[in-house]
Image (tube, rainbow, N blue to C red; front, side, top):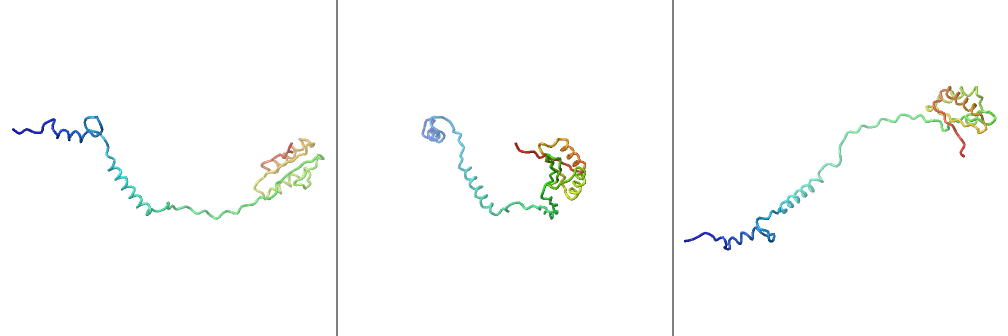
Length: 153
């Protein structure tokens, strides 16, 4: 009588050797075969390397062109400085003027200027009331900003 393969025969040993390659563990070994994944990765790399030189460089966008620049009104090179000395004499940029003529003179100066800024420089020995009167006249003449010039200590 012919029997099938015996359980302890050479076929069982071959089957066990094929399944147990990881040492003393018994049963099938669950390992991922990464060779096909590396092949796919290399194929994708080659595809991207061959396609990249043919892609257009940059973006094409319709950008609005700037209009011609508007003419710039250049301010006068010197600032307007109203100074008051210890003898109660008022000067606009070293030009003597009286307190009564200060308002109309400032109005005539600022007719052509865009910025209405005046700097007031008072002598340390001058009365603060006189400096305040100059500031008041300048504000009445349409000056928007008044700056005070002080001496450095």
